[in-house]
Amino acid sequence: MGLFDKLTGTRRPEDGVTPAPLEEVRTALLGLNRPDVPYVIRDGAAEDADLVAEWRMNEPAWQAFFLESQLSRAVRIRMRLVQEEHEVRALEEQWEVTRVGDPPRLQISSQYSRGPDRTVSRHWTIGRGESGRLEVTETFRFDGADLRNPLRDAVLKAGWTWRGVVFGKL
Image (tube, rainbow, N blue to C red; front, side, top):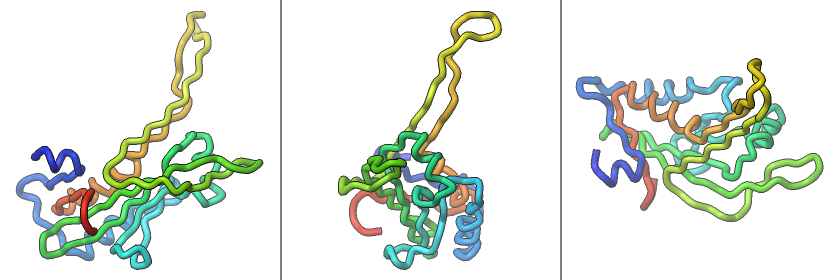
């Protein structure tokens, strides 16, 4: 892996893995959709992509989760499946998020960036343990990689390259 690949988040499949057909890769990516994950993967034709993965920030069932996480960025990954090169070109886009209103809700601001991002939010509780000593316990964890990693892993398992796009078009 070269320096540029590291900066863009590009990963290649292990040697000897036969690339799957395009429709199998698409099906594997869409198969990551489940009601218990905080993201959705959908058709991306409206955003000039083959597929789009994004946080479920606007869905009522997930709003409390994202408010509790104190999320500061909304992330969307637009993907283009390139059959000739057996690669998925992935463009990660981020927007700053603020909390507005009462009850609070998330609102996307105009600050925009692109490229791989690592947003992690953790909540800790300090209390006395069974021994009577002070203990620190992690009570909540949110990691932005929870969106990227399942997508990338599905692509690599299918024998395709996950190519991060920072500059240029998708």
